[in-house]
Image 1 (cartoon, helix red, strand yellow):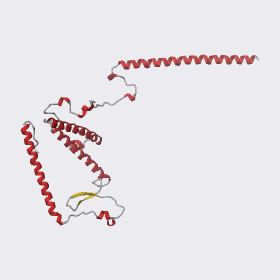
Image 2 (image 1 turned 90 degrees about the vertical axis):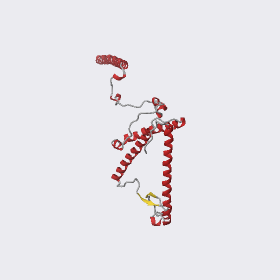
Image 3 (image 1 turned 90 degrees about the horizontal axis):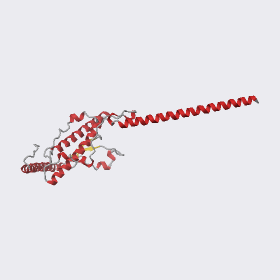
Length: 257
């Protein structure tokens, strides 16, 4: 019986010690949490008090690379700057050359294409508004520069696609074909395509005529003569229009071409 009492007393003492230790640990943990929360609050206050450009970086996720973006001006981005309104001359750079474009990556060319397209739409809008108000468009050579840049950019992209295709398949065109002449004397690029049956058994393929009869030759000469006359008529009309514009706007520059 005493032994039972002694063991029970020791068990009670052990339970009391464990309870005291638990309470002490909980108090220390709660005090640590309070200190941690107060430290975080003080650090947040110090960070918010400091300017944005000198705020400390607390994590890797907050690191950002230096980058610049265009100013968001809403629909005004699709129109010329307000400083250029009413000006007769607007400064502009030289068009992109093929040599400069060949040094760019495909991603840069893709971005540059949309920049030039946006600029072209803006200049076309400006040109149409100048026609509506019957005034001279400020620096109309900008539109020609953008068009030249876009043509050269497209040429460089086609060169890369052709080089890659030649390296992979050995073919210059994206789809193999041959130059052929139809019955009217026109020369065009005929692209090959697959058929389910051989060509000598295909009635649909046999209906295509890839030759020019002899009686069509005089008409070909007449067609060429008609084309040259139309081209000469357009050239004369363009010169007359430029002469009228020069008389109306003496300060306008006339292109040599």
